[in-house]
Length: 356
Ligand code: AMP
Image 1: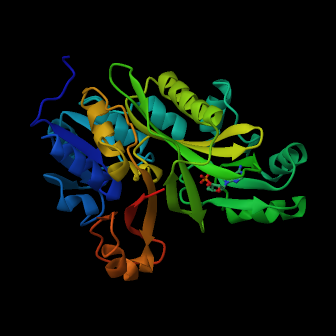
Image 2 (image 1 turned 180 degrees about the horizontal axis):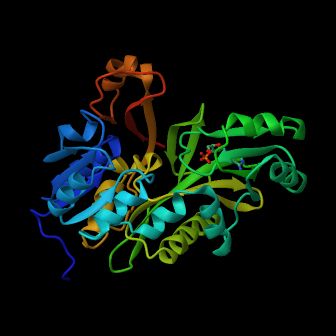
């Protein structure tokens, strides 16, 4: 296949955080090199990648020379400025492609895309001002969640509305950012599917994992998730539909709410995902290698899970427990090389092999 990268080729990664770091490690195991583009100094990926460009996404010359030095471009986060993508895509393929970014950068576009595919989502409405918020609350009811359309992550940029009297205050708290109102989904638990699609259109999904959040941040992912056989099949099939509709190449995280009436799609992330870190120790081919295989035009691994695993994020002063964790048997430690411990900062994670 002409598009297949050979060992020795270079992958360009936009973003040098922990996801970029773990992508670099996976690429290097396949004999591929990585070049990171990152505005911030001393990013976690710098310690493991061959080259780093430190420049902003508005630096046209830096973007061009970065693109010219790599064979394919991928990314570890979805909020890449459109103007930067325009410059890069003239020079090298960007995988996953622009359509996945366009859809996932904006919660409203994303919900419309999912609805048009026939998938269940929370009830939603576009909010432009106080009048549209009141009208939407009258239809959707409370509780509801008001979210910024763009740049939300880890529960940031969203506010819960328990009663219509809180509408004005909720809107003010978003400082005029374009917003979407979502009806509250009465879920029993949250799961996610990490799915991959190759350049040849083949799709492979990892077993769904069950996610527990605290303060809006993922704490643990456990496999197997509590799902019926039918729900597990539904989760995998709907992920495949999303990937095919986007003509997607790479790994995607699909977050789902489990309700008594079936699965509801919360959001999609066009990249490797925190809830897929368990695959590093639960599968022969993990999500990072799977992503590199996909964007390099290699055949996908099948994603079979060979162990029950619980992934726990190490956040902030969870690092104080490191010595105890290091003495646990069958617990794999993955640290991101971040110098400063800060509250809420993801410092690493562990994968515990669970014995039944
Ligand atoms: P998000 O940033 O959209 O993934 O939201 C962060 C978390 O807030 C989710 O993982 C859920 O726990 C909760 N959440 C978000 N949207 C809804 C919703 N429409 N109904 C119920 N819970 C939600």
